[in-house]
Image (cartoon, rainbow, N blue to C red):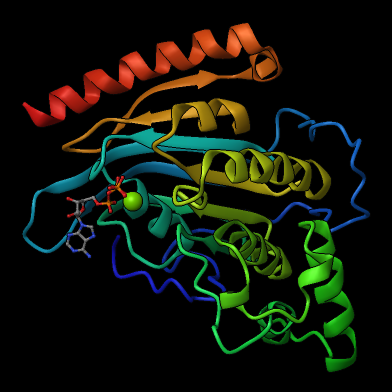
Length: 285
Ligand SMILES: Nc1ncnc2c1ncn2[C@@H]1O[C@H](COP(=O)(O)OP(=O)(O)OP(=O)(O)O)[C@@H](O)[C@H]1O
Ligand SMILES: [Mg+2]
C-alpha cells in the first residue's frame, strides 16, 4: 500500500489531471436483479484514461512505467499481477490519493469510491450509521440518510444488520457494509483493492454474486485488483495483467461470453495463470 488512508471516504478527481466530461451515470437506480450487463455504445469517451503513467517514490526504482489503459464507462476491469508490481499504486493514482510522476490520468470529475481489503468501518457506529456518515459527507439531508442507508444495506443483503456494530458482524458482512458505504458515495467509478481477499471461499462466492448484481444494476465503472485469477475471470469483462519492475500492462484478455461458460472460463483462468506465473518468476529472478 501507499500512503492511502483506508478510511478515506471520498476521493475526487485526480489533482493535476484533465477530467473527461462525466457521462450521465445511472447512480443507484431500481435494483433490478435480472438486469443485463451494461452495454456500452462505442465509440464513447473512456471513464478512465491513463496515458504513459509512470511512478517512482522519491529516488527509489521505477514502480510503474508507461502504463496506458482506457476503461470504458460501466466496464468491469480486473487488474492482476505479482505482489509489489504496483497494482495498489496504480489504483491510488486513479483515485487521486497519489500523483503520477509522469503521464496523464483522466477520471470523471465526480471522482471514485474506494474499497479495501479491510472494511475500515468505524467500530463505534452501527452498520447504518457507517453508511449515513458517507451520505452526510455527500450532503444528503438527515431525514433522507437513514432511509437511504437502509436501502443500501438491503441492496447488499444486510437489511437485518442495520443496527449492528462491526464487531457483531462476520468478515463477509463487514465487507458488504463497506460495499454499501462505497455505493453511498455515488461516485461513477468504484476502485476495489483486493476487497474479498480475507474471506473464506463460500463467503467470497456469495459476494461475487452480489457485486455482479450491484454492478449490473448501477452501471458503475469498476477497477478491481485481485491475486485470484478465478475471481478476475468470474467478475471482470476484461483482465489486465501488470508486469513487475517496472509495472506495465503486459497483457489483456477480453473475457466476454467466457464469463458465463464454465469450461471456457476455466481455460481462460489457466491461460492467465500461466502468464501470471511467468511474470512472478521473472520478478523473482
Ligand atoms: N508510499 C510508498 N513509498 C515508497 N515505496 C512505495 C510506496 N507505496 C508503494 N511502494 C512500493 O511500490 C511498489 C509497488 O507497491 P504496491 O503496493 O503498489 O504493489 P501491489 O502490486 O499492490 O502489491 P500487493 O499485490 O502485494 O498488494 C512496491 O515495491 C512498494 O514497496
Ligand atoms: Mg496491493
